[in-house]
Image 1 (tube, one colour):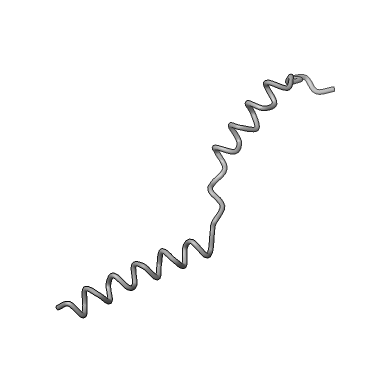
Image 2 (cartoon, rainbow, N blue to C red):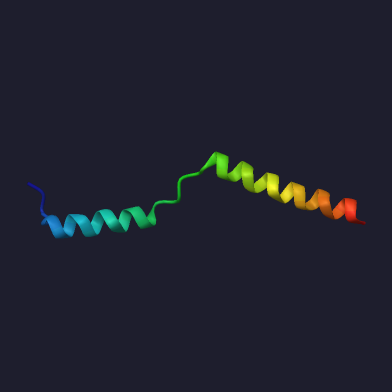
Length: 49
């Protein structure tokens, strides 16, 4: 038995806290789509000049 025992409500609060603190998972597909959009914008600006 640990020194500090949490009830169910306390455990939920701790879990929620840790989920907020952890960095967002890196989504490769979303990142690639974002990079592609930026590239297309740059290319469009270059062709407009």
